[in-house]
Length: 280
Image (cartoon, rainbow, N blue to C red; front, side):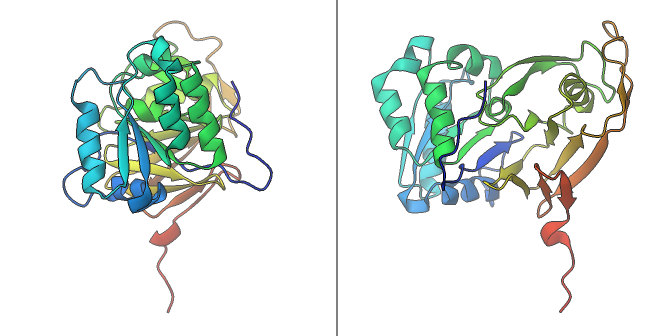
């Protein structure tokens, strides 16, 4: 699966993965910024709550985005693969100015929506310029390679991660969420041992990566993002490891970024961004 091609002279839309448990009651920095990217009071946001088994998830995000003064919010609750072909759902996706995918189980997203006309349209609309964001499971599904599930722990092991196809908005990174809270460094680095061309992005809760059309990642929220760059890996024992054996990886580069810091996914250079003291 390849990301949809961006037309000549156009820009891809923002991609906004969130680590889960984003602030919904206080400053709401992440969700406010997402609404603004979608057009503010002119925004038309399509909410996809399919990953969640809670019946009111879509309604809660509708209410939340309306309180943040989005112009219109529609819930598209895909319950079967047939729903991925529903004309009314496709019409909403074609007209919206932003898509938001809620948390839950990312395998529900991939098995119900993956490969359907709806998934293809989300990918196409992002290439046409609209922002697509997701929290927790909704963050994991955004990239081409998705962490489906795995085990906790700081050390990578041969069986610590299982991968599945995501929606494929980009192939530049692999997302993991609830990162620090659930001790997921091991499974993210294991995923990179399988896919060393990608950048690993570990998102703490209430923390988002705002990834712009120029492939610069900007950190927003109260936690940190752990960026793991495997482009300089010199050796990995993944091909030799068996089952629960630990995997040796030499040459990983790790950055811990907080709000205001940036990382360029093309040049793979990190920057303190707005955290750098200004000289008056």
